[in-house]
Image (cartoon, rainbow, N blue to C red; front, side, top):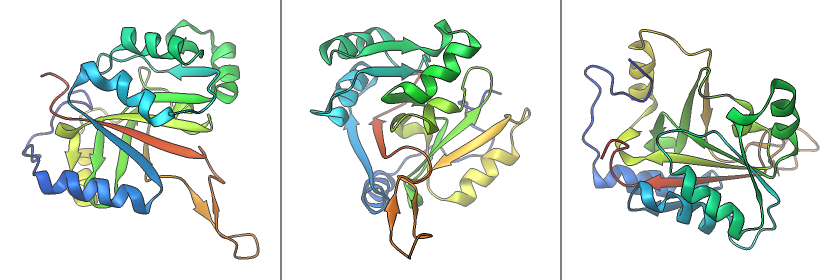
Length: 203
């Protein structure tokens, strides 16, 4: 079973209220969310999240769950270089991961109560694009939205093949270690955006 597939016994009915909870909690954790009607609108959602920002490069983990062709067009419209992780050597990948302005990744799950996105890392889902660029944009389908962290715990326990790592991102990191002064983005991206896609990736 791949991480993107439903686990046995895992609830699949997504209540409208859960999406509303996700959107509300996202504001609390300083994550920007745009809701789009389907896969064909993902690129438009990315453009909305980036707005008027001067973006020079986008590092994309290409995945069947996103429309790479449309994203390439969006990058061109933004005058940004589109870089696929799969076209890079190991050294190029490490260099680009820390040099690109935006990292774009798909997610395996989302958690409504904390507005978290969850990535199961494996060969097809490298970690750096979600943590190294100053802006991370996550692609999440509403069919992947779980209600609570307990539901996520159940999903993880039901994996037949555990991923090499699991990243749970709940907005922009924050700390008050220095003179008790709150600071956003101390660890990881300075901005986290989420394209919440209505429906299922297989729809």
